Image 1 (cartoon, rainbow, N blue to C red):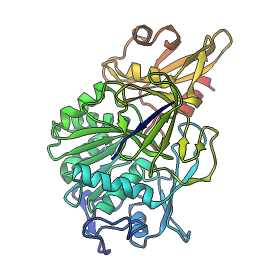
Image 2: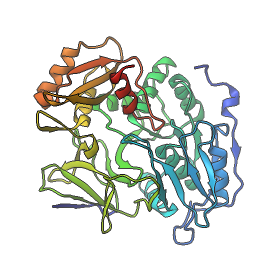
Image 3: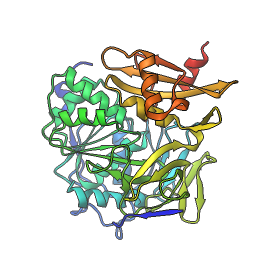
Image 4: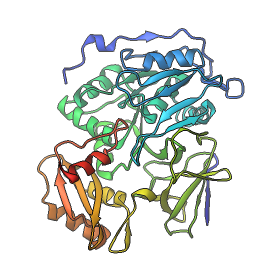
Length: 421
């Protein structure tokens, strides 16, 4: 058993840039967790896109220090919660099944706000941008962080990649929170808008999936002044690891500050990941999952991985996505990361269907940038990189990857495509 611990489509018009300032009393130094156990809206924050669904309600909740509920709704993703104690209630992405409602305390996010401010110097001079609905925890987290640290915030969901790129340029965005898929669309949008770089961007925080080296290089090309920082976590855990340019290829990095990780396997072998930190959720307000388990103060959400001698974590995938092919355990996430390395691949997702002879049959859906590859080329790459058991039986080109509101591939919809009418 291994323990790891880290110490510490139209172009944008003028109306889209309309902004309003909040006059709620804020703390000069963002906030003090001891004195302010609830979120405190910073007086310097400006909402640059007030028409984005949910942003106005979120501001009112922070101003009144009320709890709020985030839902996967296009019209009203944020609603006021009337609990006596301020809680954040947020629906999970539904990647691994039916969405659940998680409950977490403000402190569990506020402590990482402090790390963001202290280690990266982010504060009232910055402008944040998000690309997903406020019903998704990544966009919600980034928006609340901006409003508590005194930064400006603009929400760029439900608009074209070209318009998103134009918005980042016009609004002087300095900090981005995005999933790898959203970041890929931004790169595409910048090309459509003939934007060669975003010189004001300082930080790109990417989570919610594996960022391939190819996509990271493409993002670096248009975010030349920015540091790209990837992190691994979940709605239940918040931050678990953090990676930067010094992290080995294929790793999601080392433990995030104040996070203690435990792998229930000898060093270098694959095991279940357990985490203890001040950022963990309080529990499910609705629903449950068999892979979410507590062992004292340690929490597991069913992720599997291994670490090297330097404490770098290498993910394999979720237990509930692991399948057997000819009695060999296979993680679809391994195949997705492998296929994403190919030059012309923009995004990919792998699903499986039962197979009488081999237990399961793997089907890989791929969206391309430019000419699609021949299926045999994708299969050969998987065979050489991962071995015979990880070769998709079918490789299907798809014009547009179906996505969840969280910006992740909708695996249920892909399975429905495989099942057919």
